Image (cartoon, rainbow, N blue to C red; front, side, top):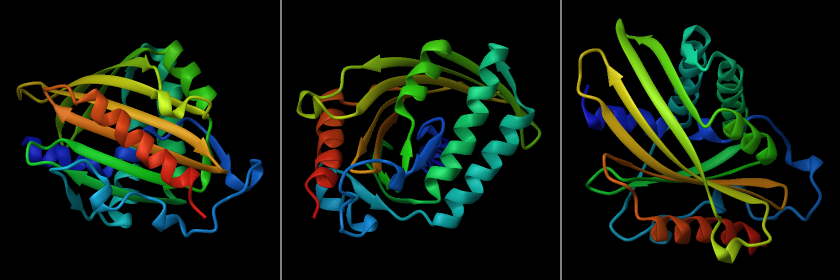
Length: 232
């Protein structure tokens, strides 16, 4: 399996980390934007320079989410008590995707940039609690007849100064995945989530082997959140 194939699968599954649980946006206070949700995500010119927009069909995302949930149901998770939260992630990701508009771009070196806006409000405190309880998780499963082992570590980050006072969180995640006898593939991701005006804004920046540019991530996260904050 090549990095390109895995990167494509990652792009389709990016919304899985949207949070563990959520609520309909109407249950939250605040004035929801009148702007259509698909106009609240970033357009290509608002992504970092050197990126190119990717078109990923909604039905492909839905299929990937369903497959992920089925895989997780039979996977071995270490520590064992972290399996429940992982299943929650799959369910919450599918729920949030059902009311999300998203935008994905990548660079030539396969750095992936993702921005999405969902009508469901992610439970950020629950996400923080789950990551505190399970800061490092190993998942072992069978993929297309091959053993797949993945270890992921979560490190909480300080949100960008421009988002101070916003209901927002940010993480750096590092993962190493081995499929069959292939050489392990390492991925580093910066991800940020904010609940704004009854909506969830989520961004991810991922690279293989190298570490993404953190200042670029912070600017990207800030731009995505402020677009929703300032929308009509």
